[in-house]
Amino acid sequence: MPYQEPHQYEIDRATSKNELVKVIPTRHFLSVPLSADGHWTGSPALYRYQLGVWYDTGGNEITDPERDVPERFRKEIAEIPLEANLGTGPAVTGKCKICGEEMNDSALNEHYLKHYHDTVARAGELGEKLEPTTLDKSVELKPKHDANRVKS
Ligand SMILES: [Zn+2]
Image 1 (cartoon, rainbow, N blue to C red):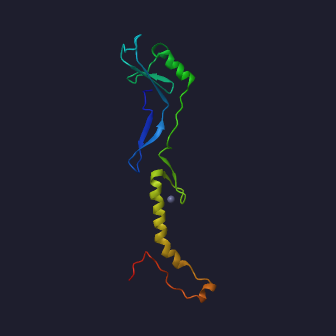
Image 2: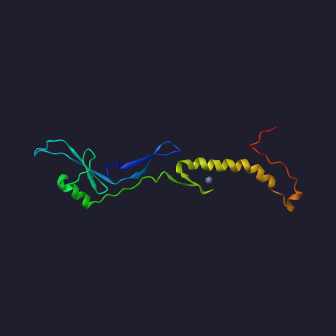
Image 3: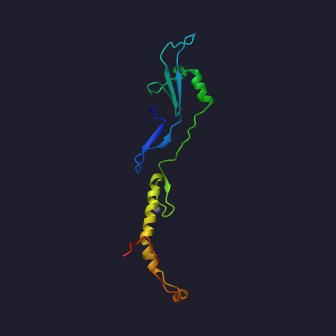
């Protein structure tokens, strides 16, 4: 398996933003050959450990880690295993509390607004279906003030 970017992003269809959807546990080691007096004596080498496989500076799999990966790096992996924590959940996590539809979290606010507007649009219709009870009959019904209606 080729080396993969540790942080995997996907475009959120609702917002066109990159959303972190997956973290592949990866550890990077940088090895710089030093002389006895602390000067660089060669090029730095990058070693990356991911899903049980070592990769070199160019992202190629190291087939013989025992030979090609410095022992102190292999030892560290053995002693401190990799863990990944997702900072955010997957892109699709939202569930509408009104109708139960699942969608991107980012789309949920807009969806709730739609429910709200639908309800407001139906408010008049619902009101007309309400029958006054016998107790209400003695009360003269006045048209309620409605801020949403334009005065004629
Ligand atoms: Zn809904």
